[in-house]
Length: 339
Ligand SMILES: Cc1cc2nc3c(=O)[nH]c(=O)nc-3n(C[C@H](O)[C@H](O)[C@H](O)COP(=O)(O)O)c2cc1C
Image (spheres, rainbow, N blue to C red):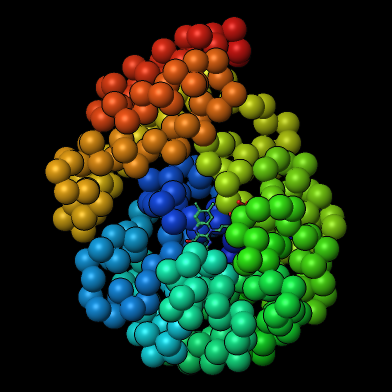
């Protein structure tokens, strides 16, 4: 698959196949795993601009960055221009981010109800105002992550993309599904191609890339400058390496085991150190909290393996690292014929 290094502002993504922002998943632990497996860049989980403004400790946990994460975008959502500007300035002064990304596509009810995320696509002039003001306020490059529209009844993908470009954004990532469809159904890669034709800034395409063949096909159909992968990377961070090098074989069980362990241990460390343990739910210590947060990853890491169903039934009992890894070993033993 032919992809050139993607440049915008002073950011260069050498291999422009990037990890999508995913709330609840793309913390520093998972990001570092994906980067090591070949992801070209990543984003934080979506972070509330109002939360940053209110000085909320709960919000700051999302802005923890590890040295393995770069290049990385601080990914924020909000409706008010002032809040987005203040949040962008806060992120810039942290000195740990390579660019700022503005969320204009999140369909989650509590975000849309506040007029933020996907709701902004219904009034794209507001997107333009936010981008213009944030660009003026920070020196870091600014990108927008959006969709092909809120629904077919509202403003179309080309109008949104043109407003984003005209307002001065340095890059745009477009998810090829309408917000009203959340994450369901096929992504429309042809519409991504129309966006690519309509603007001069780099375009990253997103939606429905789960295999190296999907990535190649998205690029062939749309001509986008980069590919963003969300769910396809959960439990399968090797996907990035396989896209980079199609000859790379699927990981054997030993490699899977090693990545599962590293990911879990990094999550424990992150949970123990981040914002004074704010990732811990009340009543849980860091190890327990990390094991609970690891559950959806674990379920995907062992997808397709014999013994998975049994493990999933006891998922909530796996509350320390040793118990998790013993359960993983138990599953792997049942699949030892797989190399
Ligand atoms: C669990 C989950 C959390 C997500 N969180 C965010 C988010 O914080 N910000 C955002 O812009 N998109 C978010 N998304 C959307 C993804 O970034 C991506 O656009 C979507 O999953 C489509 O890509 P995919 O088909 O490769 O999964 C989320 C998606 C999922 C499944």
